[in-house]
Image (tube, rainbow, N blue to C red; front, side, top):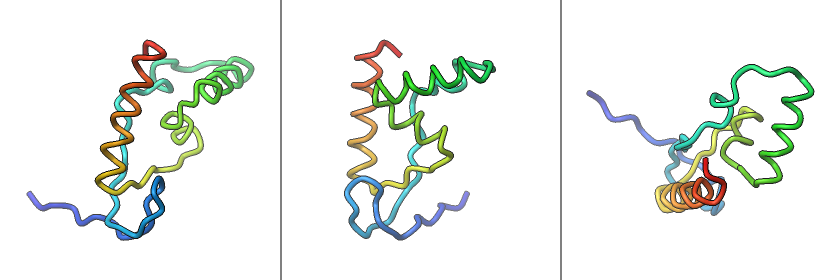
Length: 88
């Protein structure tokens, strides 16, 4: 098995130039919701934005969150706290 070389660039969170890794969220509101009509989708997206769910919002916008190792760990802890707060 070969190790994947990290991308060099600016971290999405701390903006420091470092080796970056894609952040894969622990939870996935999008897959849990499933197929919905356009009006319901708009309401659900607004709800995700109101809850400040930056992980699922990034997925909706088709952005990959590239983070350095320290920020990756902080994002993971913040996501777990967010999941506890909103019972996700």
